[in-house]
Length: 119
Image 1 (cartoon, rainbow, N blue to C red):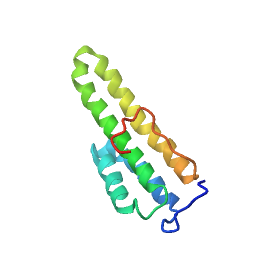
Image 2 (tube, rainbow, N blue to C red):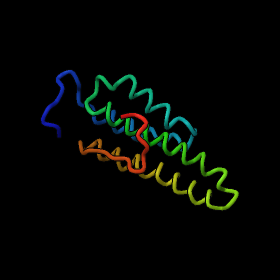
Image 3 (cartoon, one colour):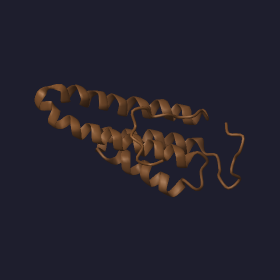
Image 4 (cartoon, one colour):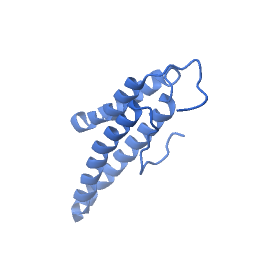
């Protein structure tokens, strides 16, 4: 937990949990796992404690996975793309669940392999 807490921000671990889990919409809708966290982050980043940083981390991870998925498509011609796309799918499934649990427990979250589009 942070020693300094902004009195204007409220703690809402359930919303952080939902934001992380909303990425799983990618597995159903394609881009819902990017759009929903983006909307939550834009509307709640100044209201919920840790939302700004975790929202940026989620969006960085989602953009990285989208780019890797797109790169995987032409690589399917040489079979490597099937492997990289499977890895992207697994990462897109595993890390949101792990980080949702961490956010709900008040622990710091981390998305490895993410390109920093938002700082």
